[in-house]
Image (cartoon, rainbow, N blue to C red; front, side, top):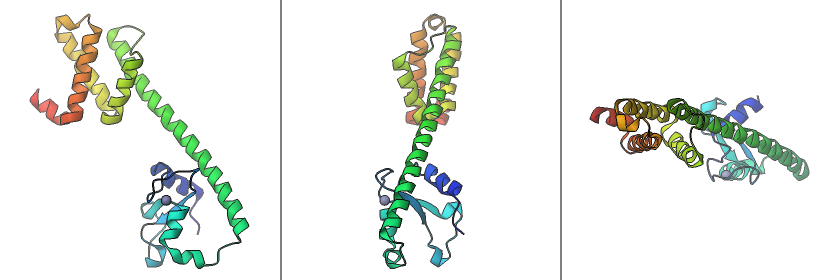
Length: 190
Ligand SMILES: [Zn+2]
């Protein structure tokens, strides 16, 4: 039974639409599924046995298949172009989804600042870039945790109370420290 389109694209998404062998993406290449453990050696169609591979790498890998009954070149070509377009569209949808998710996370950090500072501005452009760096390296939860620590510090420190920049810098310091040393170590040494 052929593998469903849903599963195929789930595997592609998990691989970020990147060929596992050469790192290329559509529309440069057309992706297909490869079996980690070949089917002829008992490999199954289970998700964990499937790999995102480009056409070239997959066919190159098992040269035997090239000489098997391949459909006529034209038919194959039309099908391949169609498939390539489908993949490109799916990749675009996937990228848009990722971008929206990222922006949502950055906004959450900005809103947490705005709430803590009691203003409506939150972070400026440079601050948003910094937030992105921390979200990428620490994840959203730890980035927000670091902000909670910074605001708790502010609440105990009179000279920080009216100084938003100090809170921001303290937050940056915590995030960089967690990136360098890990969050657990930070907690132990406090
Ligand atoms: Zn490839």
